[in-house]
Structures are given as C-alpha cells and as structure tokens.
Image (cartoon, rainbow, N blue to C red):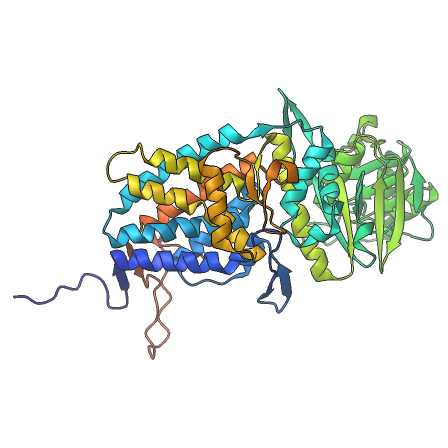
Length: 555
C-alpha cells in the first residue's frame, strides 16, 4: 500500500524550504562580493573578457554584472537589480547590490531561528518607509542654475569612477550636455532625454583633455563628391530628407518591351528628368547642404555640385533626428512638399574635418541647439569605453538633479543617519517584527563599512566612531571621506548624492530582498531535454494552445 507516489518527473530537481532560502542568500552574497570592491573613490577595476574575446575594464557595477554569465536564478535576479537602477537613475548600481546582499545576509539569522519569511518582509517594508521618511527630512534643496553646486554633486558621483583623476573634465562635459538638451515642459518641469539627443562620439587619438561638448552635432560622413563640393559653409541652410534621390526601381522584376530604338532613349530621358525635377524642387529653396538618409545618384550629385550645394547621403536616422533638433530643420519625406519653414538655418557652421583616419562632418555653433554631441578623445579604445560609461552616469546624475533638485549627503552619511534613526524607532515596535526591523537598520551600515574597507582604514574603529556620532543625532552630515578614510563633514567636503538616486537604491534593494526571501521552492529542469542515445525526435508542431503555457526561461 505504501508505494511512493511520483508526482514530478524524474528529470526535475526540486529544492524546498530553508535549503532554498540559504541557497538564494548565498548566491546573492556572492554577487555582492564580486562588486563590493568597486564601491567608492578608492575602488578597484575589474577586467572582464566577453564572449567575443574583447576586454572590458571597468568599475561600473552594472557594466560588470552585465557581462557575467550566471547560473543561479537568485543571482540572476540580483543582476537585474543593477540594470533597473541603471535605467531608472543611472547611478548607484553598485550600492544597490551591496545593500540587497546585506539585507539578505542579516535575514539569514532569522530564517535559521525559523521566523516566517513574510514576517521578515513586513518588517523590511516598514523599515523602507521609515528610511524614505528620514531621507525626506535630511534632504536639502538646491538651485539648479547654481553651477558650482551641481558641479560638486556630479563630481562626487564621478569621484568613485575611473575618470576621477581628470578632475572636473567629465563633470563639465556632462553638465554642459544636459543643460543644452533640457526641454522645459512648463510648470517648472524639465525633461532631459539623454539617449536620443546626446550622442557620444569616441575618436581614439589625442588626449582626454581635448574632449568637448559641441553645440551641435557631428557624424562620421563626408560629402558625396569631395572635390566638387564645399567642405566648409558658414551659416548653412540645411535641408534634411529621408527619401532617395535616385530613380525608383520597380518593386519586383519589371519587364519592358521596347519596339523602337528611340523608345529606349525616351526611357532614359524619363529617368533623368525625374531626378532633375526632384533636384530643381530642392534647389528652389537655395540650400547649402542637403542631407538624405537614403541613396543619392550620380546625376543628382552632379546637379547639386553645379549649384554649389554640398550633399551627404545615407545618414543614420538617429543622427538625422539630432541634426533636425540642433539646427531647427524639419525632416521632409517628399521633395515636392518642401516649405521654407522646413529649412534649418540655426547652425553657424558646417565643416568636414579629418580626425585620425576618418572624415567627420560637423554642424556646429547652433543658435539654440536641442541636441548635442560629446566628442571624446583618448589614447585607447578601452579607456574611451570606460570614459563613456562614466559620462553616461554623470549625465544621468545631472539629469536627475534637473528633474528633482534635492541633495542628500554622500560618503555613507545618509545610510548611517537612516540606520541610527531606525535603531531608535525599533524600540517602539511591538511584537515579533521588532528584531528583523532592527536588523534592517544595521544592514544599512554595509555601505559606509564597505567604503571604509576599500580605503584600507581600521574598519571597526571608524564604524564605532561614526555610529557614536550619529546615535547622538548631532550632525546628519558626518560620513567617511572616501579618499582618506577619515571621518569628515560631508557638507564641507562637498560630497553629495542626488536624492532620487538614494531613494531608488533603498527601494530597489529592499523590495528585491523581500522578493528573494519569499521564494521557498525551486523546481528546475523544466526545459524539455532529449534523452541521450535517443534518435532525433519528430518535430512537434505547436498549436496556439501550447504556445502560451510554455515557460519562457530568460536567456
């Protein structure tokens, strides 16, 4: 009677209960340890080899984790965290992982004492709400137009990155770029679209100091006929098209039977007239520069160079949009619908320069550009890639500040203040949730502790001194100076963080920790594997019904 009942297939592996919790916590801690040393200004770089054999040298938490190939499901979701953080606010990718790892680490003790995970989660969420309240209390508002303050903020963000040794350079570039592309939405709101309207061009060669923000755009193209067309035009009138300036071929094979020989000439003439017509329509507006996203035939090129117009063909759509934003032109789809208002006159200079081996076209000195290009120069490709990643972070920070101009102290001071406040609050909490709540308070100290470790100072002494200072609640701005490891006032050292970066870090870390704690069963082996030695199975034809209930596993 007591035969074992098989519910799951043999090939499935099932883990449940505390084993899963311990496994998940271990995995998350490993991920956190990988990037723990990259936190703070004294951070180490990591060198990663990607699948293509390329090298990535970076200390940007997200860039490192993106390249890791991880097997454990819990570790995968930890890596998602830093990606979310990067997309949302662009900075704090390392802190999120370190914090989430620590949150899970302190929860381990409670799971061993057989606390129920939901109790721990409830306490964590309560701690999160109180932490955000503390943030609101210590945040200070700033004036976005006060460049000094914003510069200090962006610098403290990049201070933890590799490019910090170049001083204000990257910070300046980032602030310039974001102020150019900011668009007022009214009601004091500003929208800054970094992805669409800021292009980073990396040109190896030269020195990093040569990097600059162009008031306009540059792109990797030369004019169509270099000998005949002008390569430098002051105050150009620019027309942007996205239609081909060549004769349209038939969609599929077209056969035309010609009886007389003259008909052939008529056919050719028609093609030529068609192109000539288009060119005449465009030249009516006396442009100096015609840019199209599609092809441009030799004949059209001839008409343009005869009229002294420079032409550029096959430009990327994204680049074309940027030029339109920079010089105020409208991208036109059909030449016969051109209007005077579509011609861009906002640019001050069009010029083709040779940088390194390539020709680059510049449309610069625009009057009110809403798009810009950051030109990065540097000795090697790896260095440029790293500078670009740092620049991305810096631009995100200055965008955040433009959107929400509030600062909190950096250098672990915020976390310590939050931790001290939560410790005091935990005394008032009744019932079993008190202990996990207090543990969450202690977990916040992971950030200043890691900072101290990376500086190589005596961690325990520094931490006790800091905790003592914060416990009295005398100065919320006391933290660690990441370069020396000394205890300093963050207001004087100008080490700041953007408010929404911190808030997002706390939210993401705690919510993720709760999610991982709630997992109590892992069933693996869902993929249908073929038994070894079996012949090729018949291809199964999926009906619509199965397509939905097939489990899609992330790659």
